[in-house]
Amino acid sequence: MTHRSAPRGTGLKSRGTQRKRTFVLGAVLLLTCTAVAATTGEASSASTPPKPVPRAAPGTPGAPIPQGPVPDGFATWSDLFTMQQRLNTKATKVLKAARTAGHDNPVGIVAAPKNRELRVYWHGTVPDGMRRQLSSRPGDVPVTVLPARFGTAALRSAVRELSASGATSMAAPEPDGSGVVVRWAPGPRRHSRAVGGVRVTRDPASSPRGSRAVPLTGGCADGGRYCREDDIPPYYAGARISNCTVGWPLRLANDTPVLLTAGHCGADGTLAYDGGNDLMGGYGNRGVGADHATIGAAGSGRMWDGGWQNSTFTKPIDGWSGTFVGNHLCTSGSRSGALCGFTVNYMDPAGPAGNPGAAGYASQDAAQYGPGQGDSGGPVFSLTGDLSRVIALGTVTSGASDARVPCRGENWPGRICAWNFRFDRVDHALTNILSPTFGGRIVTG
Image 1 (cartoon, rainbow, N blue to C red):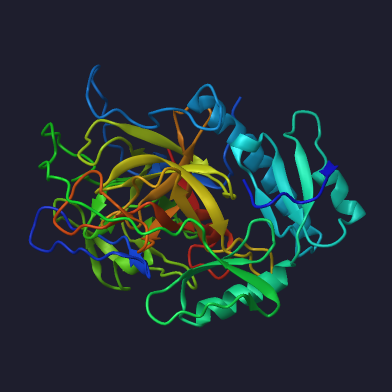
Image 2 (spheres, rainbow, N blue to C red):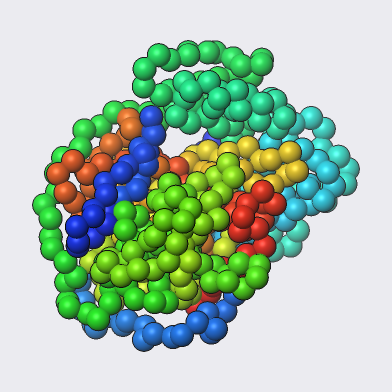
């Protein structure tokens, strides 16, 4: 375990008559319209009726992600995600030990693969009982413990006050515990420099960008019996629904099959339809303090990969995991297709009992693309080290109104996409006692 002074900073409805184009991402604009194993708590998909897994023929266009240059000096994407899994596994152990011991620490954890180490920000003196957990054991990634200026309680209080003011579209702790970062909502702005003694700064990533139209490209490309755009039961994650996207397939504590999606996609009791306008089931189980809801339909343990019209590329779901600042992640929206190249910048503060905060905030590294209207509720994920399976991290919620970019995938005049977006966390949905899906299990493939 290394101790040193803190560095500066840290690393819509488809074919049919009812297309909705809601987008609350900020202000916010809603976007409606050897590898380490992921966290356990999965449900086998064997209890749901199988359907043939689509296979891509050699040379089929629209290959699955990730594609493009590998960031952070890694030779391959496999190397990057293997390192990220190791960092997240160690971070999860540290958090579990701290919560078991009743500590309101660590204030922040940065698990950025580019650092090749786990950075843990601790307010005050590290107790002797935690030093062993924070040390690097054989086979562990290096751990560096750094001082946090403010404690979790002070940061949590400042975030609550700023969020309740109506002046911000985002308020979250700085990963290093040095204060709170905000994005100001349109209209009158409260340019506070401090709240309750806690420093307040504007998110430096905020930067208005104009959007432009991208031509429409049509329906399912190859006439397949089912595809991302028009799936059939049991549904894959990433498929099109009414004005949103199918999230992760779950089994609730009573073994009822449901699909996790965004809470703003439908009010409790309203009905969801798939991309072919077939009835799926009703919305319910809306989250408390989180933008989660479920659809009463069965899902299979796979996720649509590749483009928005894809009928051949899927990946099995390996499980779920917590996520941390610095993580690389991908999204799989039914209108944008699968996109990678996002990094987690901020996380909601943990609850008083140590439960994970509801949401995280991520941005595309070059501010060039991102999810958009119709992608709400869709999977946010990372990959196993061999890139063959996906690890559930969250569901797309909203994008920042001052981060608009040209949309990828399906488009229509006026569609909005954003390179900076919020996602609601799967670990909050499944482990927070305030969540209606508490105790549920993710369906794996």
